[in-house]
Image (cartoon, rainbow over all chains, first blue to last red; front, top):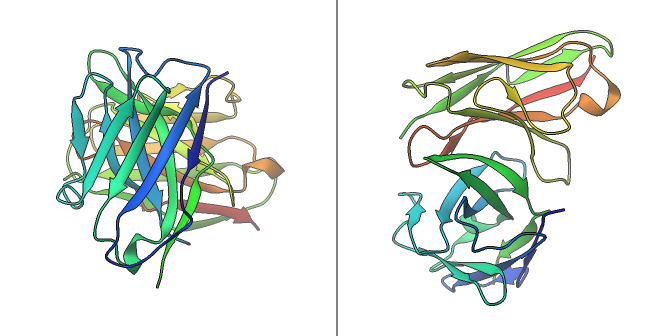
Length: 122
Length: 107
């Protein structure tokens, strides 16, 4: 059974860089059929897609965050990571990692991690 | 970017009743639409993809239809575990976008 688990600091100071890791178990992150994604949800609000990455390096980012975001893949540890720089209080959210099915195109998110709450505060 | 809207914002339904949720896209997403269910403190769960295909393990009381810009999710007979927030999401075009959600609560 595929599992995704987010990890990282739960508190980040304003203007600093938010760094999270998602550890994948039950499947290889090097599978050609999937992208690996980050999605966030501010408290009490809806879902915002941050970006998706294929293990070969192809990446798509939300234009609203593109200048500050980077997603990378570590195939040796079956993990992928998110870095979001220059965070503000608006970055306080529950951050989810997810797997996105991509064969002949990119489609739905079929598996999600449980999420990690990151608070941006001094 | 494709903007997704959902209606109503909140739907109050009694257990055993039918619920129909709507989702609209600002431009055609063909059938590249998914529905998710989210309960408090949990990750979203994939219910429907391809606008009408139930994901693995999703009960038959969940059905969905639509294409282009108008979509619907129907829960034929609500059970206690179905009271949650439901989101639609398009994957026709990057950036991927979600609707604001419909809360289904107990009447």
